[in-house]
Image (tube, rainbow, N blue to C red; front, side, top):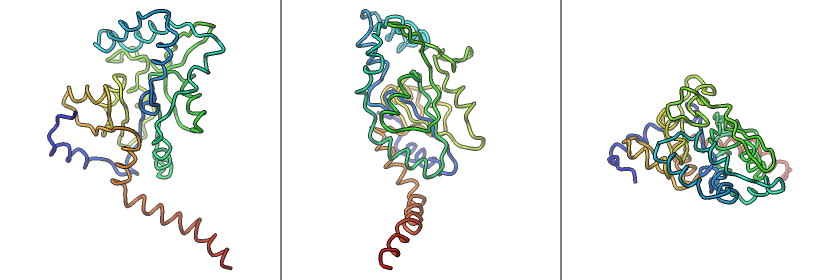
Length: 258
């Protein structure tokens, strides 16, 4: 999909930061999860199909994600007993576990930046044993059967009128001197991706970056990114394995033979 020349793509890959130089921003719906949580809710609980026109207007750039989500949320009618049950079957990309393991091993700052809702993000992460990770997203108020969108991370000066201005969140959480690596798949990731030093993209994000002639590395799933990172940081990963062997495994072995 990426129409940039092979030479420029190789040059771009060579700009990938070392582990100690970077911090990572990752989208949630469609990136950490296999499906978009809000899309699944809208498909199941919208009163009618008018959300389709709302979605098309957003995709065409006629409205921002804030107006899009507010209008779509106004169509939802979710029974209390189904509020959490409705997302129990949302699966995460299996590669997220190894990706987080590498990131935490190397003490790399990471944050989830999502145009979704914390109510559902927290539940899905908790269901999969993923904790202690910084999250910036929208939130919601539930008053059965209505769900109202709340945007604590919006920005009146946001260029694309997002519900969650990811650029603003990244600016507030950015560690001085660190290079930004962005991982995402959707239209809501475009502005943040363009402000990052290195981008992993798929889906709509990849299409939009291609249209704008922006460089990125196209990924299929998070395991694809894990394999890329291991290859680029091979020396650092090897050193960790050696350290792990001598500090944890070797003492146990000596104790056994004694």
